[in-house]
Length: 497
Image (tube, rainbow, N blue to C red):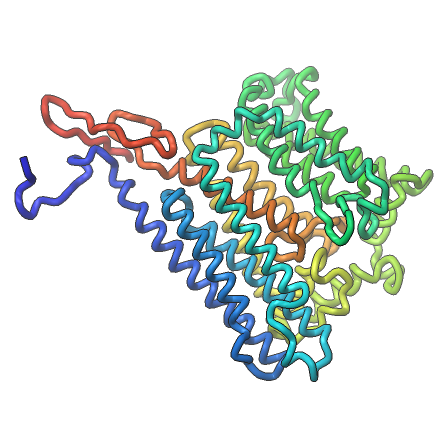
């Protein structure tokens, strides 16, 4: 039989919920937001050209066009491979990534004599390399989305990923300084003219293992032995995993000489542990362990030196950067002065002098950008990061499997923690770290790892957004919709509040 003329297809005739019709709407919203992000990047790049070259060259738009093309390709992959994914993640990340590429090109132009800037190639320098890394990183994220059709497959390889993460963390520590150390921190693998930071990929592997382990041990870790000041504390026998990760983070602090990486690893474990158990006591124990270990390293660094000397020096600079403003404290002082010079509105893109800050293309890019876009602009950037974290947490909240829910929230919190660590170091809130600002700083390792992180969030949010089918509570990602249920020959419909 055919439907009567003029009849419309409704959820009651298809067996699917009204939520299923949001697939096209989500992707169209994503495309519109992506176009807006590219427009902002184009305006930002044009303003840099006016301030540094005193004209807008005909080819200034080429880097932005390349970014738009690769982000559009990623959008198409999401549209066909993850149609129910969150529509906000890609445009927000594209905005940050594009601003980072444009600012690095701005630094390249500033390093060239004014008379030669007009002829400076648009794809040269650090900005050109960052553009190439962006193309590769987005391509890897797209491949992950295509290959990983169901995020639950990750749990099958949880222990392998955990072991891989530990190995990646430890490789720089055992390598000679000539092959692993940059700016006093042993975080790299260097050979020839190529370098990679394995710790950026280790955090993804370790998070996958943490999510799998904590989901299965959640009930045990939630048990309380006694109550103190209204807080239930865990049993002593259950502190083993926390103590092991704490010891690992201290080894990173001692042998790799980097507080930021140590704080990131330990912090992401404690946060995921708190999310899994909802016990505030784990946060208290984690904070006491970490700050106790850091204080011990500081005291030992001031007395015996050795592997603690680098951390002691950074802590001393943090306590009083102006004690030696032209020596050890020069980098932090210049970064603080740059932020202060920017004021509320900044000097404008291309109008500041970020070149006075050492490592402005990497560790201190937040300070360099802040000088030119001011406090209001930096607040907007931080809100973009906050929005990405919020959407990641939302994907974890609405997810349908425990491991995916915990993994999504762990990924989102790790990204937020990394931003806190680097921004805290630049602003003097905590000692300086060797972390990079996600999607802004120059470097391929951080960019690739963070784009893979976003791809995982997109895959989990797609699974969470899959439409429920009448008579079914869970529809596996990519699985065909079952036939609608009928009661006495009449189509039925499930109404969700």
